[in-house]
Length: 336
Image: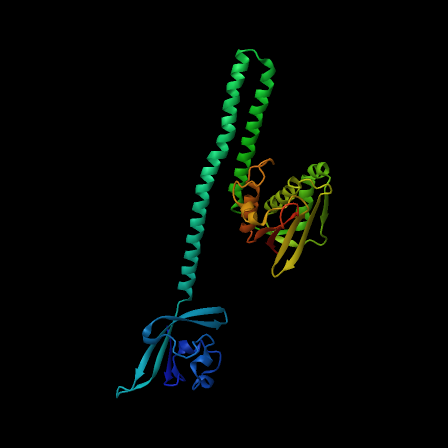
């Protein structure tokens, strides 16, 4: 039932129906005679609302949150035809507007996914074609070298073919991980983040030793909600990324820390390596984006990390002052 309020010429409340009574923050007896803009905080300053039935939205705070009502105002006339006041009708459009907002958000998401899919299809075909062309070329060389008995070249040909196969395997594995990153396989559980850190440091211990990097971990890491394997994947990717892009740093350092925020934990992985140009801070999370082509990789890792963090209802971003200034990757996760 729509809420109906009757106002006098000065916009003061004369009468109202039961549906309107439920919207008031004061008893009906106290409300009678008050200007409508004192009854509803969101009412327009002049009290005119929406003249001649044109829709205008009124926000009303209720016990279960904020509700939105479409206002319709009709002029009230006496039996002699004189204007004596207004009849205000409030129609609840909360559900309708929520559905519209969700629909618009879904359309935006689908458009973004469609754009990503087009780019994904193009880049996959391009990146998969490269090792295939390498294999085809060196298979031809291998055939010629065997036919002409140039045995000294055979080992080189086979090595290049093996490298191309390894590159294709790495790309396909990264694509598989990316395809799985968009959803959780298991229900989120309470996970001590210290356990995630221990798993990651054990997995990359060899690379840390080879790089000579020092790794500092903050004490008292929190308990978060998530899927353990996915969170290990996120942190391992970020730590490996820091090790990979240390540049010419003679004393590499990686720091894993966190800060408490409202309802969530803000984690960071800081390194003192090569740094990232501020112009590329968003680009690094794009699919197949590789800022340094001389370093081995597929350009899928950070895109996968971003998807995993977002499916955990978190955010991820990077901060760096530029080349040689190191980088800090931040990401949020819900606290348990």
